Length: 202
Image (cartoon, rainbow, N blue to C red; front, side, top):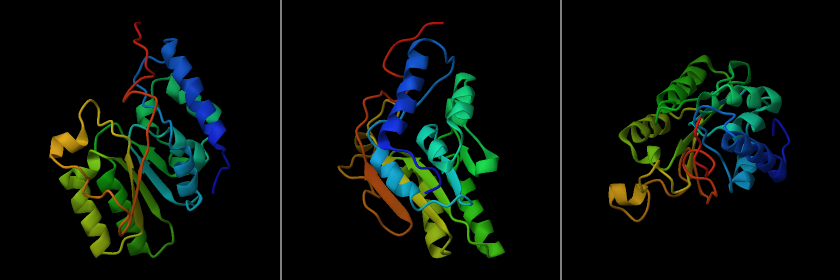
């Protein structure tokens, strides 16, 4: 593990950000984590400092566990960058575009393999993104070419305001299990898809 955080410390950070948002101190969207602290800590026990991490708009825990200083991160979130946190010096990038980081992560893994270096890529995706053609094609390419990448599918049942299962007419996601180059987990969160549960006016 790069940075040792306890479950309670991760929760405290998100609680602080939630309070800032509900007090109208953040004039931009935030997407908060809750209920998956143990899974994240377990995953990051395998992540090395030189590894690459690509995230969705929900990336606070990844940034903390990758070593980004919490004070720096909080300042960036207060500046409105919560959903696009990028820290090249820590090899961590996030994007608010659905599936936006998936091909970038796959391309990074291809570059690592061509160079023969020993970094690894970790690409976090949501449940809805995991059902898209973009995800399937990138996963298939990485498996067939044995790229140094792991895709982490996080299923919180909140695909913006649309139920992933109903959208695709299925009771089970296609990748609702750990398979080659995929880690899958489900969690329940107290937060809505965006925000911290309070309507904010500026």
